[in-house]
Length: 238
Image 1 (cartoon, helix red, strand yellow):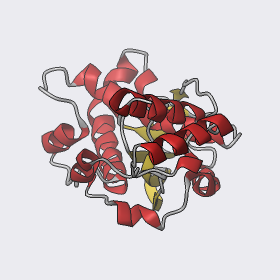
Image 2 (cartoon, helix red, strand yellow):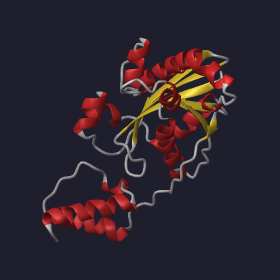
Image 3 (tube, one colour):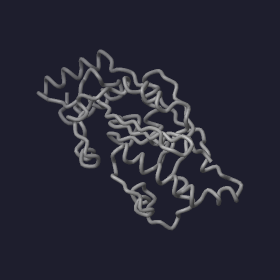
């Protein structure tokens, strides 16, 4: 059993780490079973939030405008995480976004993790849903959903419930694997900035069609710029 770890949760602009960005990070550090620290921060995604994300999280563009960018935040996060394994509900989701951010900054980010969702899927098969929100209701855990630090706190409480209820069953089965940190694997490629021809084409298209956009052209990656150009061409033509 692991009693020292960092539980981490992210809020993001979407579900795809290749396209979407982190907007909030919350983390709770546990050592020898006791909470010894918490850490949270907004992250400037350098893009306007979609209304569905605003409605889901309650986070607004003005809250992110003055926040640091991920490149500035990552060293602080690495310091807080230290050598601890990470805990999460669907932990690979959060790891994939962090891995992508690390690769973009040419940083190494290798971690082991424990996933409360996998434990719940094995032992709570009769529940209609094993989302964090549903499991918190099941165990009577107070939970303000879809904010990073609140989700991290709730996941710590959930993990303790799962340990109390199911750890001995894993031990009796000679497994214990679900309660043991295992390497988290996600292949991420570094984003490359948009090319000069892409930038020139975008500015020409915006000027020609009198378009106002809600993103910073200079901060686009090559793949993002390509998608933006294709979207304009499909909708407005050349």
